[in-house]
Image (tube, rainbow, N blue to C red):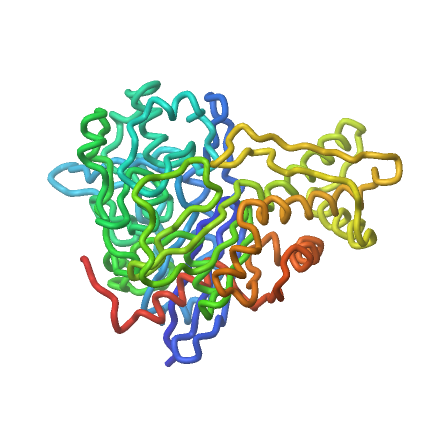
Length: 477
């Protein structure tokens, strides 16, 4: 009987699940749904998602996979959107019985599932409440990575200052994918890999420890910090059957979606990976003996993300990727609604791509940094070189797609790739796979061949991680 690794990716706008056959190392089944979880917050510049809706979508995705294969899952890997934070309550006691923290389990007939209980909204990586003035009041981290708005620790500092009563309701915090792992394993606390901890800020990747003393001195609620574990280890075992997945199935500690996407794409150290999903990243592997600088440089467009086994990736991580195209679609859709013309966003997106494919090039210039960048938060989007001949939807869409590539190559110039010995670019990510114009512009942006693989994404990547490391995984449960 075939055995499978279940890979789960909880993305910013969608959830994808895959089944990876252990013997052939191929994806036999996959399913994806949009979460539609964004909510309107009372706070200016807030970006929050409904945790209940996210988990509802996750359950729908898992339930769509063949139950006979789910019953033969031998391992679960989970990845998800980094930097964000969700809070939940610790284990409670009712009538002398312990209730699992953060969720309720229900269902029957091999279709048990969990739903959030006593949890907050997810405050995502896109949250903009921590402006430059607020960040300047925070203590300097003992880390090679700067702190930025949307980072978990920065968000907690914001709540400390402006809504301390909110934090008093919770005892546990983690990323949304850390939360899923905790619920699957029935953990009273949260374990977090260095990949996710580094994305929160105030984490030293050299020592694999939080900046406890710095945070304590600032009055930070350090009891909310998860226990740090190595990237690639197991967090525990499923506490009960889940949609057919047997109880006591090992579950990996949650990994960063970016690192998992790279893992699914980069097969050789002479390759760089261009990932464009909601945001965009360009990355290559640093030498195995590389050590990042001791002091962060908040003005640098290149960061060094922890990968596996003490290695690092050089990363240009842009806040502006597929979300720029989504904003263009939303803008046009809003205009059409004002004109009382109805068209779905998906249909409009497809029409824009067709129009742009009819325009080989355009001299219209679009700077797509509508969300700013972490190294330059005050940057704004711009449109220039406008004349009557380039105002078509095809020219606009082409210019937006090229602008996304121009921005990422300005953050990490292709010369850096050549000097690092990179010989080819691997393309991945939902926006890149969906958008033929983005792929064309990617191929024009680099003096290196750009290749696209099959099923290269975070859900596949996290499944491959826990497939490849089966014999060397360290257990912490």
